[in-house]
Image: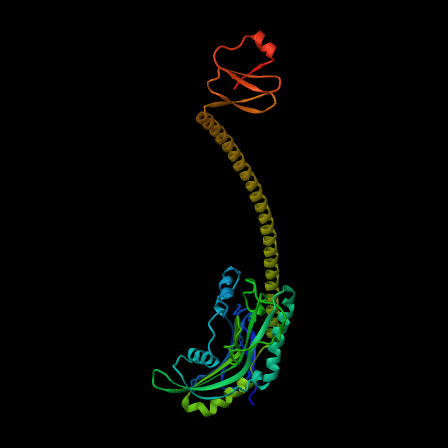
Length: 397
């Protein structure tokens, strides 16, 4: 096997290590920005044999999230610091790999063969799968206290290698070998709008556990129920070579693939930054929950105040309506009484005992005796002496 080499940039920073023959010019680079919630930075290692026109590449982590739940996807616009470039529609692993191969080779490619990728990831596939699930379980456990149960549906770890044929504009036939350490997981949750980011980002949060559900499909990317899919690669690889050199450079490529890994201290920084991002998202979630709780308290207080105001206004309105009704009834009663008196040709008088008497309108004077009896007199009124003898008292309307 070829010697393990350090892939550095022009400043001497080491980004990756892999086996490569001495006839290759090698180098490395780092993109120091978040690619996704779980990928704080990425590294690339390259090896080139300029005499033969051969290029070999190794690229580290890349993850994407597909939101099947459109409500969660819509609420993400209210979540700060979303990495929008990591959100895209799910595509088949084979299509994902072909897109990568065509982009890096700058050729239209035709797949001609498939094989298992002999990477560190692929050579330890069960260990790789366990590590992926442990990462998700740890994240969900940290978020369990936030109260949103989340369940896994389908999951997949696969190390795949595809051989392609292509042709350069000058007519030269090329072979392209492209491979990747693919990984992905489907999940669903009884999520609130706060649960709008990949679980490794800290906003879906809760314990990942098995739940008996009727799956619509065992094929990864098509399971239901499903709110979101995390998918991508731990590493991607490519060999681009004139077809004439395929046999001799394939060995170099496979040795490179079998030994490629991010530099150890850099990988430690990777995990540290990943953990920091998780903590930031957890803090943000707790802030959102506190705000939501305060908003609920304010809403309840406002509802109570509104109910009290409505009750008070209702009572005042009812009192006003009753007062108007009573005034109307009194007025109607007076009008009715006047109409009745006019129709019957009488006036109503009330004696000192509160009793009402109808007296003909022709009476010029109305008197009450000591017993409360009422008499109407037409013409000249009796003199006072007579009234005193009779013990009569004159009544007024």
